[in-house]
Image 1: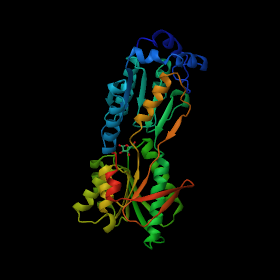
Image 2: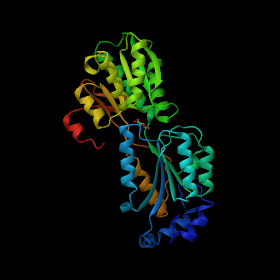
Image 3: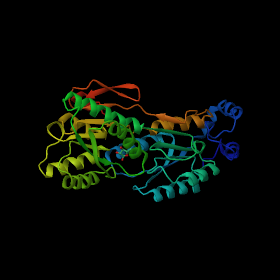
Length: 359
Ligand code: AHR
């Protein structure tokens, strides 16, 4: 825990802090009193100690998210980062959070591998007076146990994929054909997997001519995508569409299809993907992936802003914060889709689009 200006006054306040936007201050009066002397914070020059429990390093998206967090919570930005890569192991991740609590960090940031099992550790953090932020994936727990969440609307991403596929098939004159769809899912029990499956299933359920052949966990990895696609190729004679819940799985699926001489993308089996990282969009540009739905990995800067606000004694009032995301396609045939009542433009990937990519 930092010492100096905050040491005595705020630590006492922490005990009763409710993390409902007041952060380390339990009433607005104290907030005003502290923000009246902002120079004290600047002069004591203490680093803010943040413990970040990351999912792992399973995908290119994850690497981009980690790099962004490292850069955001760097010493030059005023942070002392304790970083743990949980290697996709929920027990290890919860152990990391427990160790952050023991080390009395100032703030905890969690990108939860799975949604379940967090309640008691979140209560421990609250009891210790440490504000917790959740990023990217979500957890199932009482809302008053964390300050705020910043991440993607995974259900909307899944729905966008369904809406695009419907428009694409109509455009190809295949709107009434029987369409066999195989899904390579992300890590089972993660909110990214749950949301994308739920959103896409809404379309499957509403279309009698769409048949979901299978949905198997590919763990958001290229190897997982390859393994699952190898199984699907053996099991099913015909697959019209493969929905891969991230770009790494799509690369594994393409490798499997290529190994048996099957064409994909613009020339064969339709490939839908999520994330839209640089290499994923390159495949969209080349027509290997037909459509890719963005998942933005840059949530750490939003958390850093919120931490600075709390530190200045300001409030963080919004609990759930969705980051804006875009939809990409290879062919310039679908202008827009409607997701949840909102019209979203379909961006056709060109070299210019690719060169603007930040991750
Ligand atoms: O939680 C976000 C998902 O996790 C991304 O789609 C995937 O690439 C990552 O590993």
